Image (tube, rainbow, N blue to C red):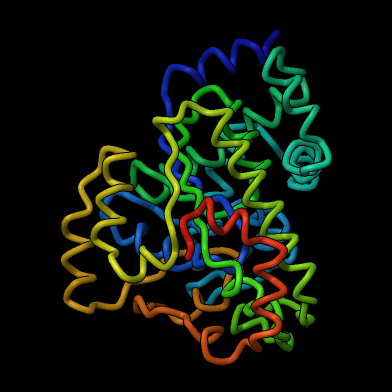
Length: 317
Ligand SMILES: [Zn+2]
């Protein structure tokens, strides 16, 4: 009963969240960073990974400090504990595992009809985390670039979160080429473990499944609260894309667009997890077209044979 009353209270004060979803290696770190250069927006990267990667494992925040030492995230944690009364990060991780995994999607669909006590706890702690970020940053909008479509669906069921979705799509060949590269562990540079090269058929399947899941989640939501953004179009015409996002969340990106047009670098905030690009302190909007020149033609043909039908839907020629 107590938790139900809390949920009623949550409805009183909605927090605006922009969620970037789609396949990894689609440029979400870049988009997350650009949006975070708006004076009223705090871009936090893959928030789903904060409890484990930042607070428990102490992985590096983009500011150069470990996530369990960084002043911003330490203050957020303190504020979160005060607001929600939670005293156990592991318990919250268990709730995340219950509601943010694809294998539990049917459970989430049921939660839409009637919220279980477990989901109500997940909702309470998750909303409190967003509120803590809003309080500590002093900014009214939070960008979460966790990408995972099931987390987006779970967030959409939380009363008090005013969720706006950006489905970010990139040419499958760029994603597959990026996943085909291997990286050695370099924690300070944002690579937390050795990353093995992924077979192209597997990456193409991952791209297809994740984008279809993202479409499904968008379909479940009010369509006025979600848009699709093409990575290549964003890089080529950032001002146009920012206009589109501005219309979605009722926000003026004029100053950020002006800064981008002048070729300014975009500052990276306290971003946890995600692409190693975030560790550079600032990033410039440059197209990543390496695959165009380096990816073998036979690999490109194989990938397009597998995914051409979906690439056409996204208007890639
Ligand atoms: Zn930090």
